[in-house]
Length: 226
Image 1 (tube, one colour):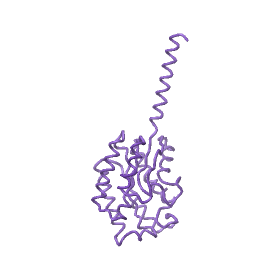
Image 2 (spheres, helix red, strand yellow; image 1 turned 90 degrees about the vertical axis):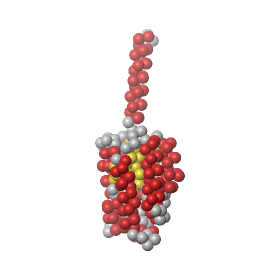
Image 3 (cartoon, rainbow, N blue to C red; image 1 turned 60 degrees about the horizontal axis):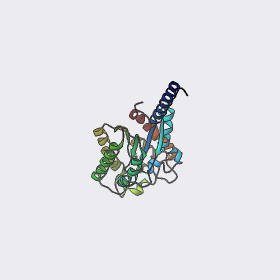
Image 4 (cartoon, rainbow, N blue to C red; image 1 turned 135 degrees about the vertical axis):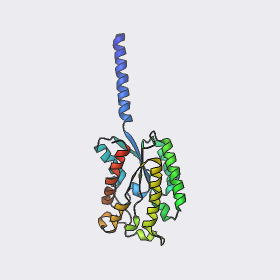
């Protein structure tokens, strides 16, 4: 092969390689951190709101791949720190959602400990993300609206307690200039509409998760600059 043709060929290959790499780099690598609400307990896994969010972001032309959802039933902020951050660290994520705190409240973790753990999580995640603003916070839903929710109150006012934790979340979001999707009010619809509650009487149904996602999606688009 003549030298000039070889040079042109090599340059072409290099350009194509760079273009391919840039196409891959443009895909948003999404990790969902949280608890049962984030894995969609009570519904089919495909109906979990992070899966819906990923689909609808792609439908909107925002190339997104849900690369990890290490959330588990019963996880608190401390469980997330102990188990989920390692998954996040290894993922190479470029976008994160965070919905956590209901199990802290159920276990009577005080608000100062919740706040301390929340700060630790956000500090850690922001230290690893290429863009520190690529975090979307999601408020804790009012599980007291479900038929079984009252059994986990320990005599406390569930709505008031969750609202106080959400105030901590909102304050931290404002301090860091992060977007937040507020699903607290819409979660109260579970009180009067049985179709919004899963058969276990405690978790949301697929219909309710879909309703949450309608509020989460526009905020995610804002985070991702669309």
